[in-house]
Image (cartoon, rainbow, N blue to C red; front, top):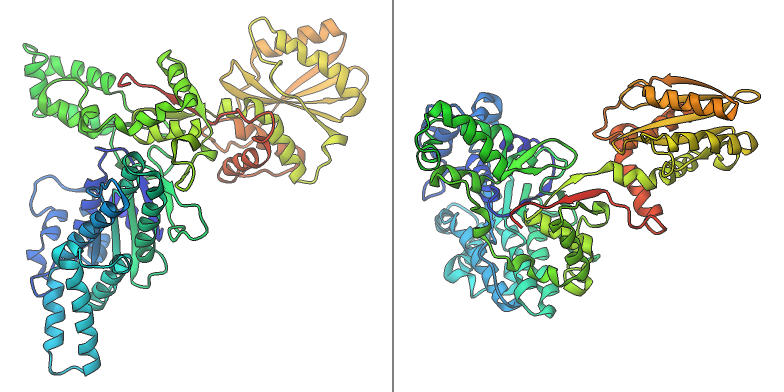
Length: 597
């Protein structure tokens, strides 16, 4: 339930991104309709039975019950109880700064028109003979300021008027309702995106600064703000020290957050639609003519899901389908591509001028996966990187993902395959353990477990040479079939006897093939190997790589980071310490191409 999750989040301001036709505006309108106080032309609250939102969300108008209607206390506390400022920048698509400024003025004027009752409210205050002169003067000033933006699409306002306009409106609404205001900003990035693609380069920063200060003035340090929600396609950040929008929590499309399931249809929701006889009738009669409902339904479900495929949310099995494509398919009765006709390929045309981006797409066309490091490409800084000659391939690919031409999935194995040794070393150094004196960490690159056991033999050969001479413990992160990370901790007992402790994040027993290979090579080397398994309480990471690192730390020190602590901390170590050296090409995310390309 998006409404409940958003309101109860406790986040002051959040930005949620998704591509076009994935429900951004629908969700915004739903939040607005649920929260807003419905009034008559004089600004008086309507009685409860006359409120459209009350009748809608308490199931007075429909047979099917909405999930949120079951939460009686939540309904009572929030339904129709707050003033709402809703502004959409979707139509602000100027080719230069002046056109953008005029477009912003018009958009904000439309927002003021949603509250036209304020003119009557303020006019009544001005005419009230029972209030003080100071109160009348203040009301008149508010009325003059409101009408200046309300009329003529705010074209007679100054830039300063527009900068303060939304904050000004929040103050007026707070004074009238005596409640703080929810501010909803739809398609916040459209003006910036348009000027990047169509306008002169010198206007890019100016337009970004305008949007930054207009939204920052209402969304930050505003005593009349209850909470804010912004939506857009991309995360465009102004990383200068003067930015006002630095209090925003970002939730990217397909990212690891609780809102991901609300932007698009989930697999379960698509199944529910395709199980509804009336909804698949057009498909049955047009595409599968002659089949009965019972015969057509399983075929339709399989082929619709296969064709539209869905996008993978990071580090989960959650599939997100484009709602526009699914609904048009059901309406038109044909399983074809609908979504790509709703936008312009111009969105990504300039990115293909970048040789690095073009090379990565050539790999995708060859059905190969490519990778980017999300930690270095989460935001695009307007002042530099948004210009083609300053955009790196990671940012370029991520922009295409934001636009929904590609999807991606987390690839911790690739992320850790070269960097796991360095992360482990850094973790040990952080804990003040002298790694040079006690512990040797081997990279897994030549010790892979394969059918010919070459890597397994190499483990024991290297340990016999290295371990007895200089180290007390050898740690070997060990990847089985390039799919699953485990760990080997090797210590010497006495003479030519070694202990090998096997650690598996899922607490699986040591593979029989690995155990036999170790024993066989030990016999060849005339040494004794005693293998045992260490059982460690599972933290149930979505991937085993970071857990293997922390399991080693647990065995060495007696404690480890939790899953919630480890993943961001490891990423920070990589970003700050590893990417500057030979591992600068490691990737944390694989990008997958789809047939729509």
